[in-house]
Length: 244
Ligand code: SF4
Image (cartoon, rainbow, N blue to C red):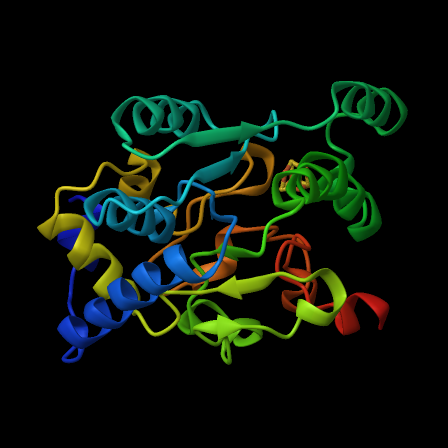
């Protein structure tokens, strides 16, 4: 059974949410310059990239290629680059930093402590993310309120970090359900990561992602050895939480 068969269940308000998302993307393309979509190539992100292409918007997409992605994700990246009308940029970590970290802490350091896991995320994700976002007025993410308790209040337009870094974060799928996402993928024949067909709801780096069982929490497949409260890689953590 495919992920589409398993999950595609549009909510009652699906059409209204889709229209809201399209309107926000169109508005964003003219209001914010420069502007990019951050894509992990997960289900939400392939929907947004598909909408950007379908609406012929001038919004480039970028992917953080951490050096630890599944082959399935790398294959999807290559297909997306080949098929997209819009540019798909790839940002990689500083090779020397990765080599030094692995030599010092070992390949499996992320399992030993939250600090080491966060150091790995900093080198492989956060530093490249800062490079990808340098000079951007806004960025687009696939965050949805339903994804976790920490994301329950995600707004469509988040200007809370503008005073700090001048960047607005746009979350055009904030109101979508998992069923809405898969309905869009199925209805529009969007290319997606085949790992979703193997019960991976959320796909990140290979060492830190696993399949989940039916009934398990949505985020249970990410950093499963850690407490729920620690489960963000820092890409979407508010500054005050970092300080705390
Ligand atoms: S998700 Fe895992 S492998 Fe990827 S950067 Fe974070 S700790 Fe490292």
